[in-house]
Length: 602
Image (cartoon, rainbow, N blue to C red; front, side, top):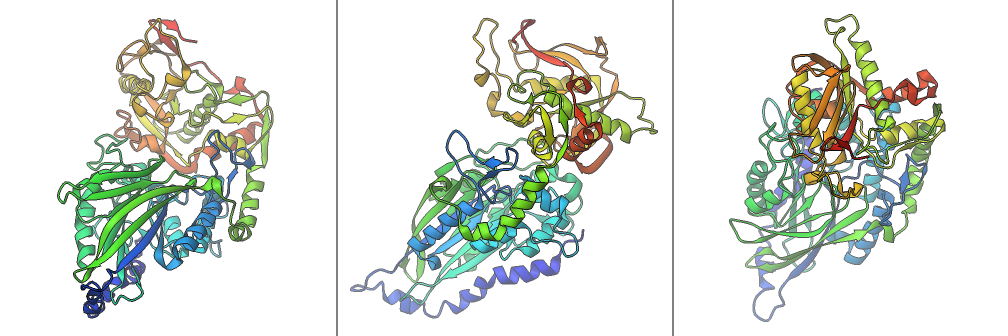
């Protein structure tokens, strides 16, 4: 889809309105400065910047997969309806004119609600609905939102339609046109705050930065259209510009974690989680709203290497469970406003009730999605669960690989690759998913496959698959043969998440966790014989993995044989619907087990 340059220029004119004010505001400086003379009290101003991130389609405190109010052991609550109540409280406390509300991205993907309005009743259809997230965020009064990587999951057309429905700009200074390298979205937002008794307003600039990993994770949609350079270099380009435009306060809303790490290795030359790097390397920033990492950081102070000044970072927990507050104190000195201090804190959504205004606004949309996910598509002969799936070969994960194998095999029928064996990967995404015995609904299957991934077929060799499995096995903590096995401490070595551990169907292998990483795959066979390193396979993988997500070896560079845009979750529902009965004998197989020096762990 061509980039909407006219719309961008129009939005830039709106978001850059503060630039025009810069010259006009210079004249009354003497009047404001007069207040700082001896005998006059110093002019001060308090600004509160509120922030959310990684909302992922959570409007209400509702678990669509369980068809019940959301609940967890920590007592958290979720949803923009709760955030709206918190925001109203803060505005009442601070004065609405003294507040700003931002988000750091990942808005339109993540729940059946967002899937429904992207695929079932799409916002892109002629006369289609307004996206519930746009409705909610417009009603709450967001000022600006940074683009997240998941904004691109449904393609540029859906994103542009969502953008058109929002009353606020979607910011992405490092989301640029692939050909011109000019911003494809507004890079920044500026707003002036009037200070009673002072002729010069406080000008606040918000710079939006998104994640370079989009180039990998949503390659199919963005390749040749958009590019995503590093956050550090783009912040270094834009922050001085914002200061020269008269910004007294510079806030960065960054869809990027603070750890300085990347999940995609060296596939792109830019850091995935770069927020702290930006604070450290780029002078002129006062605070950074952090996103992407799904962690809770009430306040993180980073010292800028050039100026020695402290930059305050904060990341509210995902899914609208927390609201960040940056309380910024300014003082008027020598004809300009100076930031005197920044303090960050969090407010908890579980402390308040839903805002009835949001409930009234989106109750019908929510009810439609609840009805959709509760449609019955088949019957299960027994209960299937993911509770032990990360350390035991579980039939419920075999269901995913079986569906992927069948879809790819059918797609390649009649091609030159039809005679090659098809194998598949799948990850234990959830630790709590369950398909109960009896009626099976869309929500049961959706809870098994929570991401909107699509299917890709790659050409791989036996040697490459061996390396792939070794890399996957790094997920387990090395455990001595005589050590007590605690399953809670057995996985996620070096912080690797569950979604970056893969089963591979069609092969048989042991994972010896007594061995060091890189030497764990034992007894690797195919159809009862030792795996031939030269054997070619069709490898059915999700698009995240196919594009390099998780930095698994060889798969990103492997030859692509086929791909599609239908979600794997949908393929699973179709498969179950066609069968009518979900019986493990149709898909379950024991492909792998954990061992220690050859002895099974379980």
